[in-house]
Image (cartoon, rainbow, N blue to C red; front, side, top):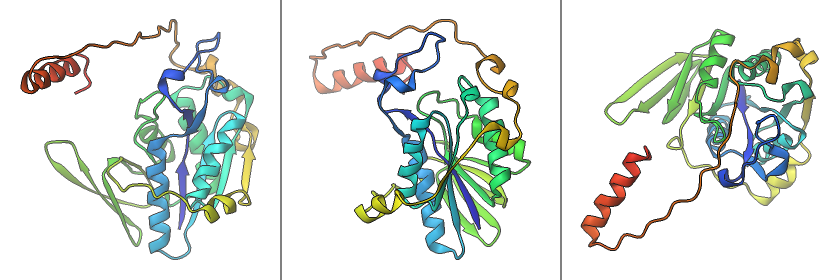
Length: 258
């Protein structure tokens, strides 16, 4: 069984994000790490590998040279090898271009299951899993809270707050998992050390048969025209606990945090 886990190198703290002159996120200027959502996908891949025989887990990323750090984290958490799609032309790629590149890489690797988080913390669009499945011509099970494999079938559940849905699909398929799918285990020191010796391959767009004109900022379907830094807002609530709770809930609701 071949599992491909998508990993993304994202700014460690949203408050630290800065933008380059072309209004893209300046990832080289901030501390980055493997995003939390993908840690859950890596954990699911590791759990499947423990339960089945002959499982090969490949961590896949695209981005700047520093994105290889996300691969090393995934390798320490159980992935067997890594693939880094690295090309200057990828700068500024939007979701359609990202799904194009990832789909080409998955085809080249071969896969039974592609695992990923539900959304990236830097853009939070949640569209890449579905776009990727469409390009690969396979089923997509998105926002799964549980995941189980059975021979060549996938069984998952998804809780939308009102009902719990039971989802089933035949492999190959693309699955995105939520933070309710299973807490990622912290890797042991031996696993972290071993990750440094695991194979990480670097592929270019030419290796994937993708033209440079199909990706990047100039090919993006959307364009950022302005960025505005939000100022921190603080308020002090001095009422009794019940009234204070209502005020806080109303505050969060108005700003769509609840």
